[in-house]
Amino acid sequence: MTERQTEDARMKMTRYVMGLLESWELNAEQQVGVLALPDGTRTRVLRSFRDDTPLPDTDDVNQRLEHILAIDDALHTTYPHSEKMGALWMRRGHRRFKQRTPVNTIIEDGLQGLVSVRMHLDCSWMSSP
Image (cartoon, rainbow, N blue to C red; front, side, top):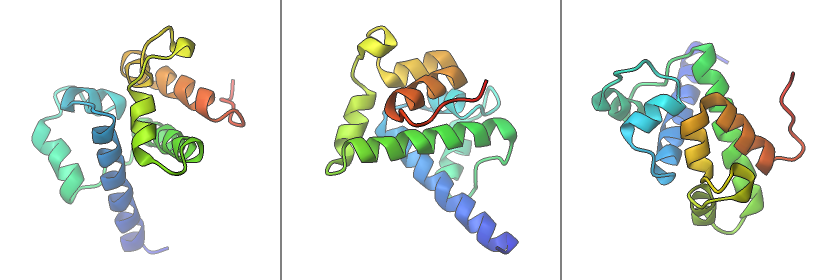
């Protein structure tokens, strides 16, 4: 894979993830936190991720992207006939998360929240110790 193909693939993934976070109804501040972007990242920077700038290629961001995409994949498996159901599930309180929504679990618990939601949705995935 050439560097250009890699950059194009990362840009495509960035746009997809930004759309996904919007479908989960995360505001700009919440998106910054979920993606482990630097505090104070401006709204215009988030907009550039939707337009023409790939997300930073850092370990923290990449780890979170892996979990976000795995959660999305598990939601597609759980609700194969409706994308809207996955987004709705993310915004409904759940006993597994002490009546918090999966989105709030992710926002409040950060990386551990992403792992918890992923583990709940994907029973075959286990985090490493």
